[in-house]
Image (tube, rainbow, N blue to C red; front, top):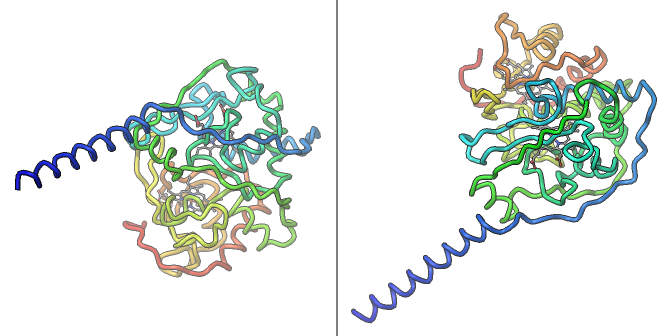
Length: 316
Ligand code: HEC
Ligand code: HEC
């Protein structure tokens, strides 16, 4: 009996030591880095492309990168209370050291595709645009070089302070960069409304990321394979730490938007007003910059997706 107890206590001691060593490794060693690439891209300089990039960036990047000053110098994007630590978005103004002045164009493109920063670290699971067309990525970068007021150099340096859990998720490879496939990616022609709408929903405006059951089940590289595709249920914590559940935007007649008219959809997606006149929560971005061809194409595409049931509580 005594011998057994002795063996048990040694085993427990070894286990405790192993746990302590793993915890120390997670907490105190450097985060892993990944090889960085400078993709070969042509960034346009004409005013039409810059305006196109402005529309995409002001819709897709401002929400996370614009500080209260209005400048895109980064801000506290996820507070500690969510469990990942204090996560700050980066400074993407023109500043030569604090901002994007230090990035080559191809490195910005590689970060947008894979989530790998110029220093090789991964930007958590927070920003990926793997399916955006090459043309749209180049237009966004063209805008980032422009003299728009939000991009004026700011020397703010914010440092993300990951929690133990976030460090563990990164070190065990659960938060990891996306594989880069190097294949050319085209924007479908706007004349093919359904194909163009699909592209807008799954790539340019990434409606799918929020409108699936959860970020965990979102299949980033092949969005249509995500369980509950566009059927909502994702619990979103916005910057003010309110919680809002995304909605079912499939053509399901009761649970989705199957009985909505185009005008009702346009009002909800663009202005954030529900058919009953109440305002949608701020976790749903206002897509005010979209042109009418884009809104019509999204609507045309949403008619074609499978009508799914969802478990969205308290639907208004
Ligand atoms: C959901 C929020 C979110 C969105 C949307 C977003 N970003 Fe980010 N971005 C982040 C976070 C968080 C970081 C930095 C995390 C870190 O410190 O590693 C970051 C970092 C960056 C960096 C790296 C900065 C550096 O210091 O290395 C660049 C460049 C960038 N984002 C560009 C963009 C562009 C361009 C868009 C729009 C097409 C965009 N981001 C949209 C959250 C976001
Ligand atoms: C950042 C997350 C996010 C993104 C991106 C997003 N949505 Fe939403 N959306 C939400 C949330 C959350 C709600 C529910 C808001 C509420 O009920 O207050 C919502 C609600 C809606 C509604 C209203 C549905 C209803 O039943 O009331 C429509 C329509 C909609 N979204 C369409 C879109 C479209 C189209 C896109 C892409 C162009 C998109 N959303 C992108 C989070 C998002």
